[in-house]
Each structure stands twice: as C-alpha cells, then as structure tokens.
Image (cartoon, rainbow, N blue to C red; front, side, top):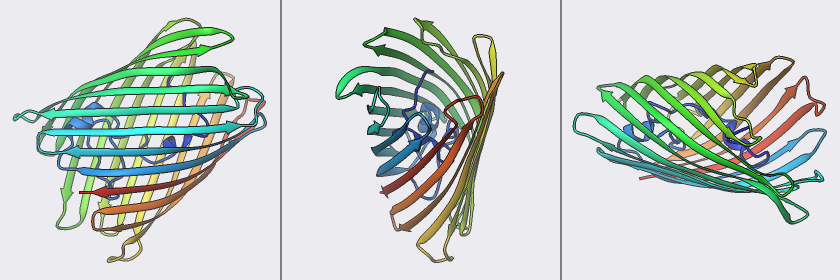
Length: 346
C-alpha cells in the first residue's frame, strides 16, 4: 500500500492523539510539541515559534517476526503575522529476526511554508520526501522512495478558519528480485474549523471538520486504494485540564473490495495541581478496519509524564497495545513504544 509505514520506526508517530488532525485549524496544544498536518494549517498559524527533538524506541512482535527500531525526530516551527514555516526530519533504523529484509532504514522530511495576505487569505506549500532501504544480511534488497508536495489556500474570519488543499505524491517501490513499480497518489482535503484562545483565563478551544479524498494511478504491480474520509478533531483546555480528541471514519475501495475504516484518539492532560509544573496525560487510540472476509482491531493505551516551565516542555510517553487481524495466520501483533519529546518555545 502507498505511504507505507515501517514497523519499528514509523509506528510511534501514528499512535498519538491528533495524529490525523491539524489539517485546517492550527495547533494550540499547551505542550507545544504537536505539528500541523498540512500546508493550509501551517499557513494559518500565527505567532508560534519553537525548536524540538523526539526520540522513539519501538518493539513490534507477531508470530512471523520481532522488529525493534528507534528513530530521532528533530523539528522546528516559526510563524509571525504574515509568514509561517514548519520542518520535521526523521532518521530511523530497525532490525528484525525475519529471514528476509532483516534491516530497515528510513530518512524522511516534511517542510511547509505559508504566507498571509492583508485580507486574511493564506497560501501554503509543502515538500514531502522519504527514502526507505531494506537489507538482508547487510546487502540491500530493495526500498521505497516517495516525493511529493502539498499546496493549499486558507481563509480566516475572526475565529473561523476555512481551507482547501491538495497533496500530490509519487512513490517508487523497487526490489532486486522483482524490479520496480511506481504509483501516483492525489489527496484533496477541505474543511472548516473554529478556534478561541483566552490567555487571561488559561482556556482555549479549537475544533475542525475535514473531508479527505484520495485517488491513485498505478504504473506496475503496486496497488493504491481510493479513500473517502471524514475527520472531526478538537482541543479543549480549561484550568488544569486539556482534552485532545480526534475521530476518523471513512471508506476505501481496492479491486472491487470495500473497506470501512474507523479510528478514535483521546488524550487528557492533567496538571498535578493548579500551580504545578508536572502533568500526566493518559490516552488511548482505537482503530477498526472491516473488509469482506478480513478485519483488524487495534487498541493502544498510553501514559505520559511531563514537566513544563517557562518556555520549555519535556515528557516521557509509554504506549503498549495490540492489533488483532482475525483472518491473518500471524495472529495478534503487539507493539511497545517509549518516546521522549523536548521542545523549547521562544
């Protein structure tokens, strides 16, 4: 499937609240670590600046293999009244006890930039790149290269946000045994949201409704499903508590087979006292994929312990969960993730 996520490297970036939110309304979470997910949201961001770095250690295991990997993810964001930008870089390695492709490496980046016109109309553009290499016994056996761009327009009227964008991706999958195949994927997204921030009373709320449609064109044996997805997401903060939630449901079709997709993410950050610098964040991510003759169900609870003071925030998150594929001979897939994330806001 297109936009392949590598076990042991990419899984840690998926199992977190708001992993698929932030397409229209810009991020406002108190910890400052969450990045936007589109050129539109970046272009609508104002007066947010920071430098951060995250480290993830992931172990995934089923009856076929055990995969262990880690990744270093530096990131930066800057926005003023008229200009905004975000950068995320990922460098990861994983090792498996499987006979083939027992080593995997990933190098990726996303770079967004946006401009705001005096009439509160914004324009955003993004560059997307990732390179994955597979090795067996130290010898390279194949890989995946992905290049793309994201272009979008946004508009803000008081506390109302609207946006429309398109993400264009081209992927090449190559193997020493079977040769190469390419696929083009186009994702169109549009949405509307609302955001209110009250610094005096230490409260804020933000939500968005987004529709995404993905279509693909295949040149070779690679297959790209067509997707229609709806996303509801929001962040609500008041006093010592912040709630971050996202809901996705949709439908995909591939070779005449229709698949129903459902996912919900929830995190609740709680300060340990009204004047405390420490906080706890329990969370859960649940996903259900249902197709004719095959289905999977995933549940990933998590717990973070963090410290926030002045312009810095650091936390440690542990996630442990299971994906159950009822039609797979592999049985359950168990995943454990440890993540350390630090950001400095300036």
